[in-house]
Length: 288
Image (cartoon, rainbow, N blue to C red; front, top):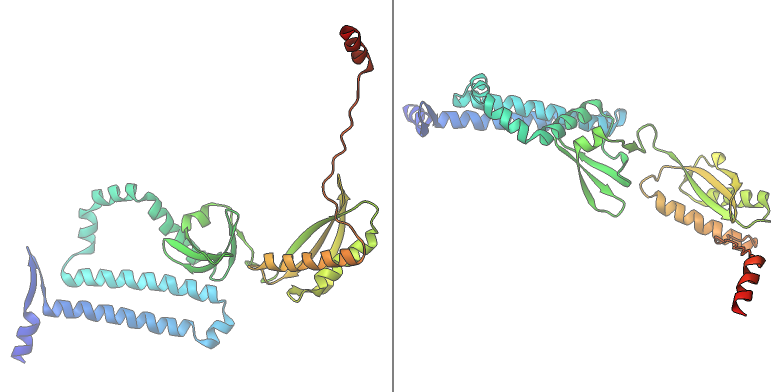
């Protein structure tokens, strides 16, 4: 027993009035292990199958992230107390330094606060489809300072959280998993309008990724400069790959137009030249 006590009292590091002994190091390791265990049990509890079925996965993830940051802050505070460093004294003594750091890292702190807002509000969740600066991104991870997403070209995008909270961001999957999309097309003047509308609706109806097919609607929009302008509207859950869905529907439309002799015109412009006969006569007189 005496040997164990001597081993625990053995001094590893000594800096001024502070010293780290073996038992201090053991306490620190114990705090870290307990923290990791608590987080592991919390994650298991939150992400159990019967829990994730009744709760949105993004909400569960956001709750776990908040719990994780709070638990680690408490653990770090306990570690400082174990070493003998008083948190209140440390904060008070480094107030001026913290002000300087705060000014230099203002944008970083802004991102961190934005991350806390995102995790607490849960307006943005994991697997949400966002449109940011014209790019479509599927959110994969929401961190304290940055969030990570994947765009349609399978490229990872690192997004500062402040960019999401302070700018206009379109969340395609916030309210519902399905979204309404549209395809515009023009046909030549003289085409059968009713037939064009039927072809557009049938083309969207054929695609397997289209939902609520009874809500497929084609509209005659306007008399364009070179064409009669139409639009077909439809619902789909395939928001992230909607470009492929639209391409497939356009191919079906083009095939049906060819089969029914309906022409998609190219832009045309008629140029009319008006001559001034008086000026021409004057030029001819001077020449002779």
